[in-house]
Each structure stands twice: as structure tokens, then as C-alpha cells.
Image (cartoon, rainbow, N blue to C red):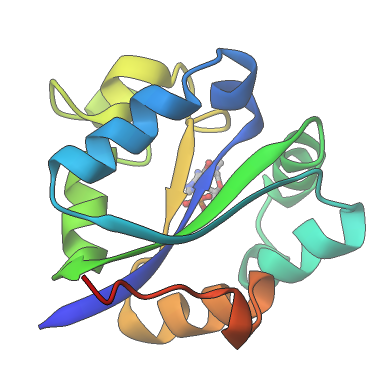
Length: 142
Ligand code: CMP
């Protein structure tokens, strides 16, 4: 089925100047970017986004990293978009990411791992709504 998923190009990848490289991977895989913007997240915005990880030991470092510089946030649409994007990204820990995945190519550590992608339909819907209003989504008509 055609799905939507939420994606972030994290501060490390923006700093490496590979936004376009990452967008190309999405496009080559048939995923369409139907919304996109650059932003520098506030601490409050990042804490809210990662609320489910609040009790985890890495929460503080995660929020600090995600607010350390600008990110690109985008909505990807396509056939099985959630799983397709997770395959493009590779494992959360770049040491376990398969060759040719974004994390294998651009991430160095589990903390600074280049990209985020929704892991399920429920989180995709929640994450899209957390960053985009309905009128910012531009589904393709051709
Ligand atoms: P992300 O998909 O953005 O969601 C939570 C992030 O926490 C994850 O990517 C990692 O970058 C980061 N993180 C740091 N340590 C861990 C860990 N031990 N397990 C999972 N995620 C971690």
C-alpha cells in the first residue's frame, strides 16, 4: 500500500553537506518527498519528539545532539514507505548497518547516525503531525 513516513536528516549529516545525497537515495528508491523544511529544533521540540525515550540513559545526549545544529525534516510517500525508508537507512547502529545504506555511508556512532525514520504507521502519523500541518503536505497529482 502507498504509505507516508517521517524522516529527519540529522545535524551530523547536514554538517557533512550530504542533504542532496540523502534525498537522492530516497528518490532513487521511488520515495517521493511531499513535504520538506530546514529547522533548528529547540530543546522543547526535541524533547517532545523523543518523549518515548525520556527514561533512557541516552536521552540527554540525544536531545543535545538533535539541537546542536539544523536538520531537514521531510515526509516521504511511496509503496511501503516506512519499511522502504528503514532499508535505505540501515540499522540504528552504523556498525550493524548493511553496505550501501545511509548509516553505513554517513553515520559514525549510534548517537550521531545521520538519519531518523518512523518505525511504524502509528509513529509515522504522529511524527508527521508533530512537524507538519496538513496544508504543508503536497501529495503528487502527477
Ligand atoms: P532515532 O531513530 O532518531 O531514535 C532515537 C535515537 O536515539 C536513535 O535514532 C539513536 O540515534 C539514538 N540512540 C542512542 N543510543 C541508542 C541506543 N542504545 N538504542 C537506540 N537508540 C539510541
